[in-house]
Amino acid sequence: MSRKFQNRRTFAIISHPDAGKTTITEKLLLFGNLIQVAGTVKGKKSDRHATSDWMQMEKERGISVTSSVMQFPYKDAMVNLLDTPGHEDFSEDTYRTLTAVDSALMVIDGAKGVEDRTIKLMDVCRLRDTPIISFVNKMDRDIRDPIELLDEIESVLKIAGAPINWPIGMGHDFKGVYNLYTDTIHVFKPGQGHTIPEDIQVAGIDSEEATELLGYYVDDIREEIELVRGATHQFDLELFLAGQLTPVFFGTALSNFGVREMLDHFVQWAPAPQPRLAVDREVTPGEEQFSGFVFKIQANMDPKHRDRIAFMRVCSGRYQQGMKMHHVRIGKDIRIADAVGFKAGDRVAVEEAVAGDIIGLHNHGTIQIGDTFTGGEDLKFTGIPHFAPELFRRIRLKDPLKTKQLQKGLQQLSEEGSTQVFFPLNNNDIVVGAVGQLQFDVVAYRLKDEYGVEAVYEPVNVYTARWIESDDNKKIEELKRKVPDGVAVDGGGHLTYLASTRVNLALTEERYQELQFRATREL
Ligand code: GDP
Image (cartoon, rainbow, N blue to C red; front, side, top):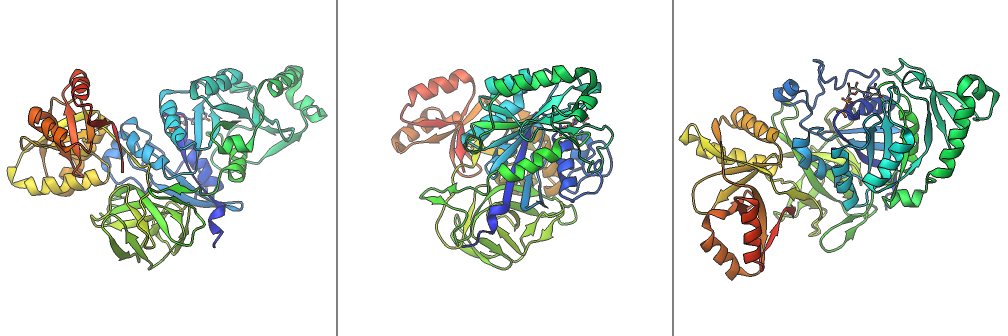
C-alpha cells in the first residue's frame, strides 16, 4: 500500500470578500516558490491577470468567477490549495469545493471580525467537521481588541479558538507577534510584503532584548500575555482534527507577516487525506484501488483550448498516465491519457497523482459534477450538494431557430453547475435558476459567446424550487394533475416543484405530506 498520500495537505480558504484571501494566497505561493514576487498573480485591477481568467467579464468586474487549483511543495508536505470564487453569487461552487478538501484556512479581517460569508462557509465546513486554521488579518491597521475577536469566533462561529501567537500592538504600533508556545517574539518590519521576509526573532518575553524592543509598553504587554494564557484555550490537536477547536494566528497578509508561521503549523497539523464516504462503504486513502469524484467543471480556462475540465479529487489509489478508469454513472471504462495537474498554477500533464491530489480530466460532455470514477468498483461518493436556486428567469430566444443550440448550451452549463435549468411539464418554457444574479450574467454571456445563442431573460413567477422525492407514485401523479403549473423536471431529469410564493410552498408541503420537498440534492 502506498503511503505517498500522507504528505498531502489539501485545503481551501474561507473568508468574507475583502478579508484578504487573494493577498494571503499570493503569499502562500511565494512560500511555495510558485511565484518570486507577490503582486503579480492576481492583481485584481491590473492587466497581468491570472491564467484562470477565462472570461473578459471576470476582468471587467474584478472578481474571480472560477476556482482553480495550486499545488506546491512546502517542507515535507505537498500542498494542494483549492481556490474558491470570492463573490457570493458563486457560493455553490465554493460549497462544492469544500467537499474536496481536508481542512480550511479561515481568514478574518481583524477590523471587521466575523462576517456573514464566513459564518455560512463555516456552517458548510461543519457538515463534515473540517478542521479549521484561523488567520486574523490586517494587524498593520487599527483592528478590534484581539480578545474580543477570539470571543466572537467562539460565540458566533461556535468553535473554540486557541491563539498560537498573540499580537503586540496594532496599526502604526504593531511590533510583531509573540508565540505563546515557543516564547518567541517575531518582530514586524513593514514594507516586506512582496517577497519572503526575513524572520527576525527575539527569544523570551522576559528577555533583555524584549524589554528593549517593547520599551515603554513592556510591562503592559507581559501582563496581557499572562492574562491571555490564563483566559484562552490551549491548542489541542485532537480537538482541532475533530473540527471543534481552531488555532488562531495573527498577522498581516499584505506585509507577509505571520503567514509563514501559520503555514509552518498548517503543514504540521492539518490532516492528511481523510477517508471519504460512498453509498455502500467508506473509502480510505491508502486503498490500492483508484477512486475519485468530480466536484467542479470549468469551461475554457484557457481560451486557446476552449474545452472543459472536470476537477477530480483523488480519494484512493493512484492515478497514472494512461490508466483506465471506470466511469460509474455511465458504466463504462475509459482510458485517461491526458489528465492535467495544476503545478505552478499552470496546466501540466500529470503523470501520477495520489489521494488528496486534484487532477483535471478533459470533458467532452460525458462528465458531470458528482461523478465517481474507480478502478472498477461500483462506488458512489456522497455529499456533493446541489442547492435550490433563489432566482429564476424564463429564457426566450431571439432567434427561434437556435432552439437546439440553446438546449445544448443549457445542458452543458447545468452539468457544470453554472446554472440550473427547469422544464415545466405543462408548457414549453425553459426556466433557469441561479443562486446569485451574476450567475445569470455568466450564463447569458457564455450562451452567446460559446453557443451563439442570444436570448431574453424574462422575470418568471417562481419563488423557489424543491426537488420532489417519494415512492408514492400516486401522490406524485396527483400533484402533477392538480398543480400542473408547479411541476417541472430539471436538467438532470429530476422531478421538481416550482413554488410561486413562500405560502404556496408551505401549503403544497402540507397538502402533500407523503412527498418530500428538498432544498438540496446530493449529487
Ligand atoms: P479578498 O477579497 O478576500 O480576496 O481580499 P484581498 O486579498 O483582495 O484584499 C482586500 C483588500 O485588503 C485589498 O485592498 C488588500 O490590499 C487589502 N489587504 C489584504 N491584506 C491586508 C493587510 O494585511 N493589511 C492591510 N492594511 N490591507 C490588507
